[in-house]
Amino acid sequence: QVQLVESGGGLVQTGGSLRLSCVASGRTSSIAVMGWFRQAPGKEREFVARLSWNGGNTVYADSVKGRFAISRDDAKNTVYLQMNTMNPEDTAIYYCAARLLLKKEYEHWGRGTQVTVSS
Image: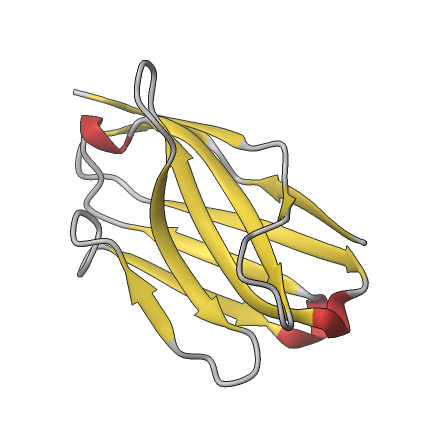
């Protein structure tokens, strides 16, 4: 099992920045990919960014490309999501997720952290 705990959410003004953190514990050696997702009120959960745990390859949703950056600190088993030039459409609950080796789905999720961008 892998446990994930997000932090760093909060209230920010349009144009501002936030950095989210996700600490992984448990069977972290089995992690293949770490991802960030978000769910806005009344909308379905959507993909934001992902990072390959070993190779460091990153993928971003078009809506955040050039504004958000996903990174990791191996020593701390932590994944970050740096969010810049934020706008009200970024308001959502942000979730961290892990996909394990040989798995096709993200099976491990954090509880989420609220991000609100005021206009």
